[in-house]
Image (cartoon, rainbow, N blue to C red; front, side, top):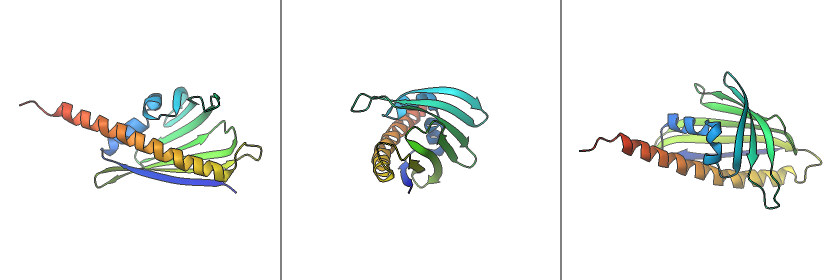
Length: 159
């Protein structure tokens, strides 16, 4: 068995702003509520290798792992995978961006499998990822829409 999730949200902001903010890895701790730190390890063209560190969980444990992320701005998608999979056998993520009436749709697809000795199974992780993705997508939407409002109001000339 393996896990698969798909979640999406429409953000009332231009695609360029959504792309720029969601692909600015160094600022992910300000964009996502779950990440405490991002350390960029290496950049090679469109591929970035980086370490993500989460805030402590309810038991005080801090989770951290290395991922690779390859951006394709012209294709409007990003592919990522965990290099250090931890409790996962594999974790592959695809982000897709599209212009839609009223803004930009951002779609997340995650395919994964938990290791047999992991503390949770694929079904539990699927539910957890779906629940958390909705929270993170709404938070990201709100922050990007706020930035877009600020940007537009700063560019309006005073009368």
